[in-house]
Structure formats: structure tokens, C-alpha cells
Length: 143
Image 1: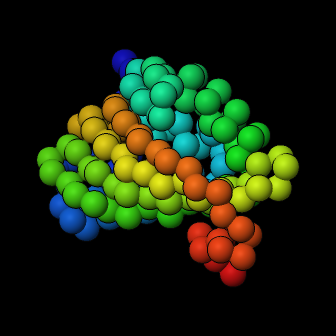
Image 2: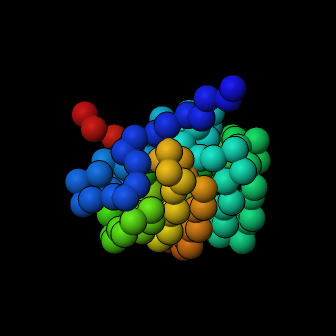
């Protein structure tokens, strides 16, 4: 017998549980731990991230490892945009610097779909990047 993992809160979402799900995602991504992040997704999760299409946790982990090797000092903020049933939409912004020291702010929207156990089975992200000066940063780690 296989035990399926459950990631509360589970659908159908209320405003409160959708906000909890968004905060959990923000916290996990800010850990910059690919394995921790990947546990929130189904084994066969489908992603679109910019122009990349991924399927499954192994591809997600590899993608995130590469991402955080390039996007240094990454810090993210997510905001609930809308929710219904088993879906959540968020807007986000994150800041990071490249190896040359240039700071970037990346803006975007994500559409999420969850299974009955609260694991994300689909994630579609649209993202745009803007170069910024370090003094313009606003997505900072808590002190």
C-alpha cells in the first residue's frame, strides 16, 4: 500500500487557506532549497516557467538548482490574486543579482492547480525582468 503525501491546506480553498498556501510557497522558495520546494508538487507536476516546460519533481529540482546558482541573493514576495476550488492565482516579485553584480527585479503571475491532497499539479509562470540599482531594492529579508 502506497501512502500519498498530503500538503495542507487542501482544496477547496477558502480565502484563509489560499493565503496560507501562498505564504507556504513564499517561505519554501525563500529557503532556496530545491528539494524542499519540490515536495509541494506532485511527482508528475507540469510547469511552464518563462519559456521552459518541465515535468516532474526531478526536473523541478534540477531547474531550481540551476536557477539559484545564477540568481544570487534571491528574495521573493508572493501575493494572493484570486482563488477558486482547486486553483490559486498569485502575483509576485523577486529580486536577485547576477554574477557581475547587476541587481534585477523579476515580476510575474502564476496560476496553480492542486490535487485533492494539496500538492500542486500544475504551475504556469509568466515573468518579466527589470534591471535595478541595489539602492532600489524593496524585497528584503526580514531583520
